[in-house]
Image 1 (cartoon, chains in turn blue, cyan):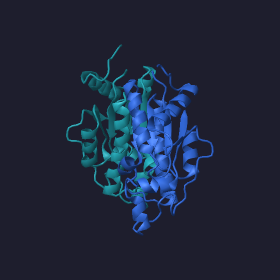
Image 2 (cartoon, rainbow over the protein chains, first blue to last red):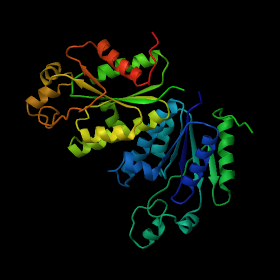
Image 3 (cartoon, rainbow over the protein chains, first blue to last red):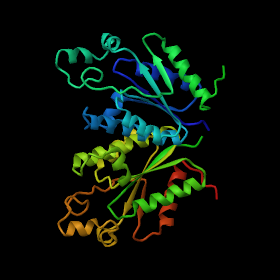
Image 4 (cartoon, each protein chain N blue to C red):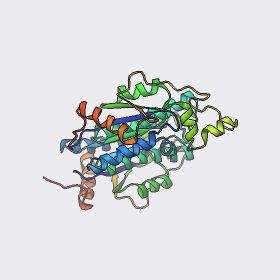
Length: 178
Length: 178
């Protein structure tokens, strides 16, 4: 049986979390590993339809996703969670709950995230149509000691993914075969 | 790899869902099968802290648990869900979403559930301290075509569990070895 673990991708909107998580998930699938990708936007529909974006609600959302990751991980499944998850409190809560927890800080300067603006959120915020955008008028608490930092403005997706695989390998969660 | 499936235990409060689900889970564990038990009361803390007991909220709660069962099941894990889940709508929603879905109607006359009253809910309802108790002043929609009916007022836990194992076997989800 494969070893379960959770990779928790945290970072600003537009930092590249989903792109990186998608790539990593696909690499696992190629190796015939069982993997579930829990993406923030999708998950809100399924688990947190009634939660908003207050500090309390964001923490609650992060903990719910963490609960699902915990169940998957302890049954040998690889869980990838891709959420802004701006607060240390709930990320650290998940770290304590989940065996084999790997925090990946997807680090990208705000200006670059805002320039990418894939979802149009930064523009909305600028126009006053959105309050509480993380990094703009809502806090983002950087991880203090993440297992991996991926600087997506100066690394390719492949390079970021390689960093992650190296760490997984050194932690004994994954064998690098080629 | 084992085959994943979901057993959904539905029935009134006090009908014996949790007792039966616990027993079945333990039998699976004895066979070294991977199993997760999602019990209604526990799950509310983790996934649905802010949901109440309106029709809408109950349906939402049932669908959230169903979502988790879906993830587990498609990764080869056995998921056991034990919730009153009073409405057909959300149970049938889960049936459509989850591959290998087995509905177990834990059927027990209301008077007997009320006499057991393990959680004191029926007494509270009688005293006017609780509104919306399923079967008393809130509807319970019986399953129309469940895979198994366990009549816990006239069967032992072992007998009910045997019925379930027989059905799992005939559906090809489980091999009965002894």
